[in-house]
Image (tube, rainbow, N blue to C red):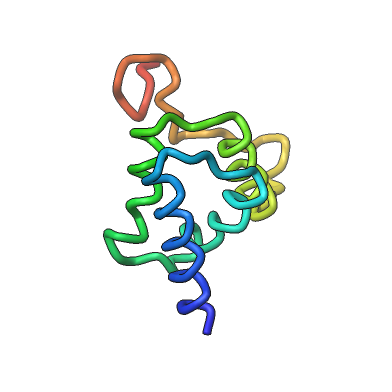
Length: 100
């Protein structure tokens, strides 16, 4: 049932975005769970993201995606002595782990 709903939703959004129309923040918020939870599997369904990139994402579209992702945040209480050993790649070096 969920898979059929997600296919219907993503197909409708793909059609709209392919026509150069913007999606509302509500629509992208509705579509994001299908992407995050793995219900969207076909290249046609994933085409929504490609078409958004080609069209150019709006602030409302990005806000809807971000809101849906924030609703799924898992808070980790690691303690005051925890150290992040992964790094984020945010230093612009193109590497995942920054040099010391």
